[in-house]
Length: 450
Ligand code: HEC
Ligand code: HEC
Image 1 (cartoon, rainbow, N blue to C red):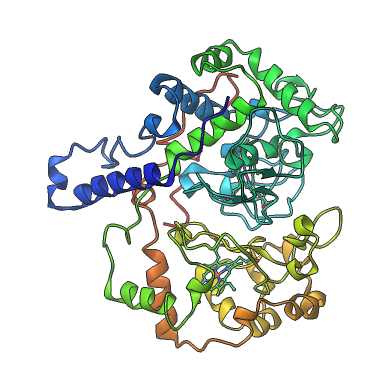
Image 2 (spheres, rainbow, N blue to C red):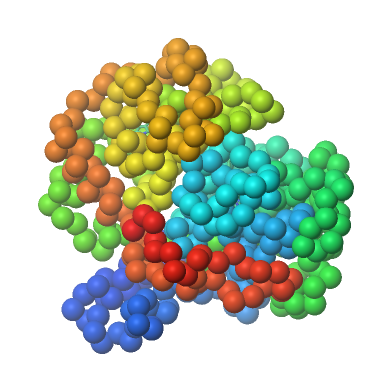
């Protein structure tokens, strides 16, 4: 059994309610609301229960969320017990990472402080996890995808009972050796890495082994039992998806509550008008869920030594070469660097790139990357990348510096209220069932991007 994705109506009702709450909090009535702690961060905002939306009895649904929360923060899901989902999807950084390319298991620290003593540089930039419930295509290349008719497509067999693409996307990182699983013969925080011993071609066996490992911790057994479901890989995925949905879905932005400056309003008019951004960044999340080659310079290790060709890897269609998924723009100001490979350190750089991708590629400044990555920029692929540029971007858009400032002001209003005042670690559980250390933001370090 698996929970159905909440219907569009349920989701929009939930969003309307959350927006109403946020308007209330921001309006003159704010003094009457009891705010938690010295920070004034309202305790009710993170983790508002959405049990009714999950289509399962209330207690079991909130048990699913509780299990998902434990899993999300627990390094025991990784082969060597050294990396959790929350290590890369840093909750204090709006679930993004603040690094151009993610660093896999073996690196140490969090976000911009993460350093690679051992372990790999991963091929892609970490995506954020806001507003992902009900999504059809996951990852920069859409390799997990719900096809019309609800059939799931993925590069792996699909565990029995798993139907939600977000749930499948949530357990895919467990398979990747460099991301979480580790290598044969390693010894980690939980002893010998039995997950690393398993064959790459046996994903179902790997997921079963993760479940077996977790089930040995009594608290996981208890949390799983409360969901009234068997402890299996589908439960892992559904619990993670339920937690991601509960915590980061239906979160209003400053724009949603009408907190717009004149510049932001002019920027909004440009975005949906003359600048033509909404040709791809349309719809409620400002993404068409489509794949486009917008001419970003390739960089990083790529896949098996070959350059990252994006959607082509999934579809096999040459027209998809260097096409990546249009990112939704929620919290975009707070989640640098930008693009599938973090090529742009600033939001202004990312926006300006679109105006004339050909000129931007030619003038690309690799010094905005850390030196190890700067050396990997594939300037030699300029013709190949630009030759396949999305037709929507082949004629340069002419915008003044004032127009760009307005667009940036607009994009800055896509910050969710949840993220603006959040103190470090406010939403991080003190401990997880395995007893391993939970990834925590260094309390003394201020937010690097707020
Ligand atoms: C080593 C860092 C790292 C870890 C650990 C990690 N992720 Fe990610 N996550 C990424 C990166 C990088 C991407 C983009 C990958 C790509 O497109 O190929 C991503 C993408 C995703 C996506 C797809 C988002 C979208 O909109 O398409 C989901 C969902 C996700 N991660 C959930 C999780 C969960 C759940 C865990 C823990 C089981 C986890 N991640 C562990 C780095 C990480
Ligand atoms: C042809 C479709 C298309 C159009 C038109 C378009 N974008 Fe994009 N945008 C994309 C795609 C695809 C990416 C990711 C590309 C990549 O990573 O290779 C992206 C990335 C971005 C990013 C980086 C977000 C992140 O999280 O990394 C920003 C910001 C952005 N676009 C803003 C804009 C603005 C502002 C406009 C209008 C001036 C615009 N886009 C027009 C398709 C488009």
